[in-house]
Amino acid sequence: MVVCVCNAIRERDVRQAARCGANTTCQAYRQLGCQAKCGQCVAFARAIIEDERAAA
Image (cartoon, rainbow, N blue to C red):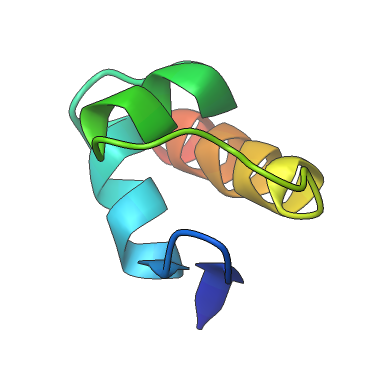
């Protein structure tokens, strides 16, 4: 599923970033070499990161 249309980031990318230590959306996007642009994706990305942290 696409999380961020502006940067073409998929859910699996955000999950992988979280598994590699990203605790925030900013950290995850930085790991992926980009940053949030319009901001529509931030809440969804945050929820994915929290889900990964809870599963760890």
